[in-house]
Length: 119
Image (cartoon, rainbow, N blue to C red; front, side, top):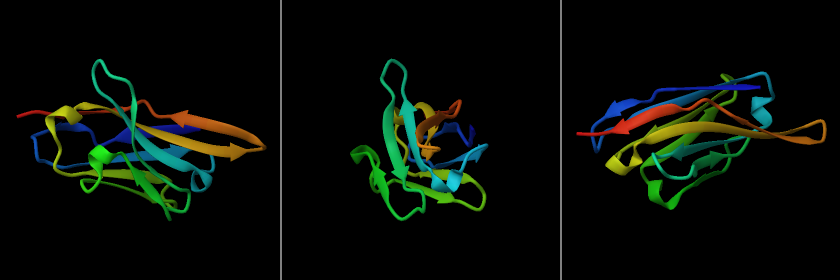
């Protein structure tokens, strides 16, 4: 399986970005999808997750009310809409897939997309 993120870039504080992650090579519609981020010198942290059918989402407290995770199973794509971005949210953002296949549990990571929040 493969995950390819896009949509990162440079944005001013208070601005918005929309990240996308396109999946291939595995059953995307059966996967729990998540976005993580890793800031310089810090550990990778969970930002948001969404269940396979999109029926349930979960967010880190720090992004609630500003970020929205969504998915389109017809396009094998998961999104992260980020609004009101803060300086401290500069990080590499990673897409993660978790799924069961033939009684085995798999976790896949994308290569990451860099988000820089700066004035």
